[in-house]
Length: 107
Image (cartoon, rainbow, N blue to C red; front, side, top):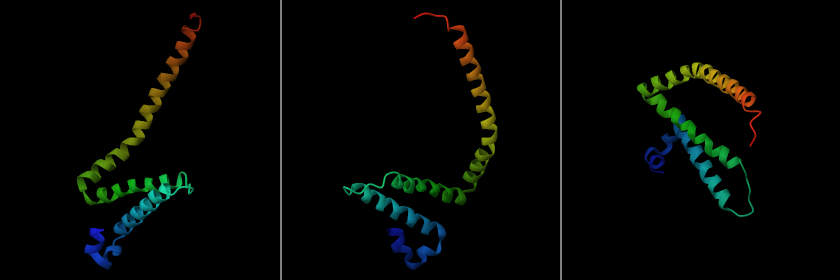
């Protein structure tokens, strides 16, 4: 509200401010809808609230060092999936091996 009052009509000229406004209003509407008895929106309010995570992109755009870290993380995701796949393969092999070895053990 303070930022809206301070900028006045110039507030909506920036796309990020408009996005923030829509997210905040949607969160308020979702909270109000959850408090009204008989009105059940279900997962719709959760989906609307999950868009708040997109506000982090505004911060990433603003700070160069954070942008470098973010792009490094995005670039490393491909290698992390390869390592995760290899770990899953080891887990699967040892699970099958454990079932075969301990199949005859009685309780």
